[in-house]
Length: 323
Image (tube, rainbow, N blue to C red; front, side, top):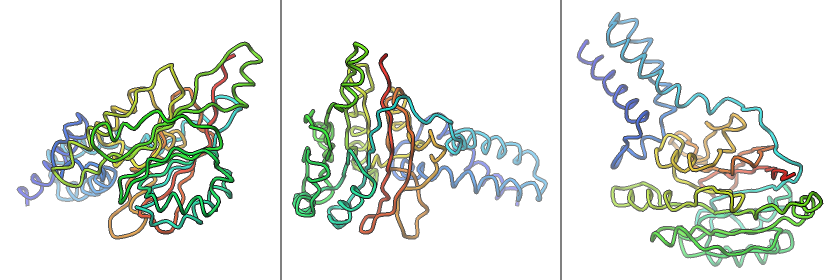
């Protein structure tokens, strides 16, 4: 029994070390890191069992491992209490449409019902783009940057504001397409002009790195996350989409550390799972909206959408005043 206890405790301790120092390498360890919140729950239950077995030294090691995981995971469930940074708002929705599996009419209805200003889509096919146009998306969001492609490779951004195509960091690394756009919000520019200032443009990337589902895909996954633009003073940047990563992945934390805040975490929803929408696997949070730390997050909501294995993420963002 002591051998069994030590074997289990050692596994938890090693997992905690890997998470704490960002040492995850190779397959299947990288995808397994997404389930860190569940490992924390199992570890806490294991503490009770080891305590009842009166194995005190293994219990001390296990308690330390659980504490390390708890410090990493539990803050995501705490509401920061920060709701806004200004009075100009943008309602942004991101959704993985599963290679066109979501009905175009359902997307358009969602955009209209939720008064969406900016829509970031992943796994967008050319047929999906045609369907969105036929369903009337251009009446609600008349501007679009289309980087669609067959299968899971495409992406697009649709907006109520004129868009400038700023490239595609995904294609630059040989991965899935990740449309990168910029725009100005007329109301925002006019409001700030009254005070003699001109704010930088807003930029949005529809994020979708290759998933880390095999040893061969891991380099592309890392390259896709590393290709995302750092935040700087040139623009108010928003990264929105299917990151195929949780905050328990070191490359994802590196993106955050480059100057972004996770909208879900701001509202204490950082543990709300977005994939899979259904099925036997426990849900994990791999769909995110990351915002420039100057941008406020007034509202955050996760939405179930028929036809996709992902849940949508809807945010109401506020742009900072430059007075």
